[in-house]
Image 1: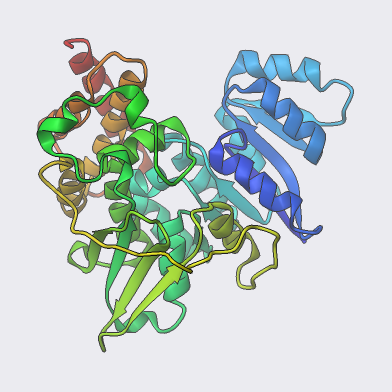
Image 2 (image 1 turned 30 degrees about the vertical axis):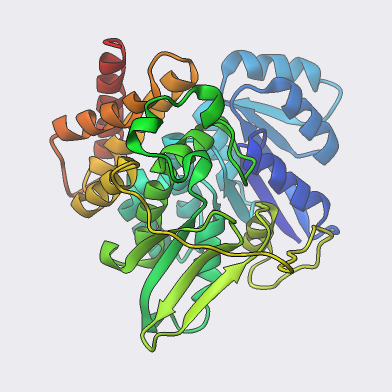
Length: 382
């Protein structure tokens, strides 16, 4: 039996992780659940899965939850200290990092320092601090198992002979605006941007998918996870979301991983690795299906080009791009800025940043804080 701490249990990935746990036939156990401030859902999860600890980042939410769970022997903790304690606990085998945004970096580093296996669903952690995270994982002998469907696909294909890779091919659905021109994208509304054609995801990642920033973040994540140069990471639009990614080897052979667009599959693989467990989830049916592939439009979706540029420069710049994007996407969700303003503000923040190399956690957090403040200043001008 493997014991889990799930960070972000009330979010989309967290909820689907708990669904995997419920179908695991006793092979998975929950030690701790952590979230921001969704008290109602956290109470439901706590009563159903009976963890030893639940953590709320928000202090009033933690206080409310203590009252709701006073009839159960469950400890309610709060804040980053509570989250870090939940990942380093001796009983924990695997930490599922499904918190949204850069906030996942510190608990991930703490879990690695404690020797835990990381089921990584928080791409921003590697975007902001990939060099630190991968170095720490190597030093402590920790496995980082990708949960993103694309990186899970690559990880599965790499089990053959990773030393003979020519390149990896990250597939992208193209989001709700595949084929749209730059001019047409100026008319995008919040409601349209939240309608992803294939995947059920949280609001932030759904907007990132529509701008293709999500794929840009995944390019940087892949660079760190698989130790590949950016020239060996290709993006290919695949609207059907059946092939989740591919690996091309030096002899010209290409291995692809296929499956339904169901995040429970890569989640379960990360939790069951190195074995595979049977489950009752719907199977892929290829009869009558047509699979198509297209080059990405870097002009209409400049976020992808920016991510390549930022990733190649490295240093504190990826953390700045990620932080600015988090702030501006939230502003878009709150209808404070237009859709085109998302990438325009992110690009401006990146262009103004003085990049630092030789990173540590402090320099990354300082860059992150600067980018958030600068993005807020630019948003206030809209």
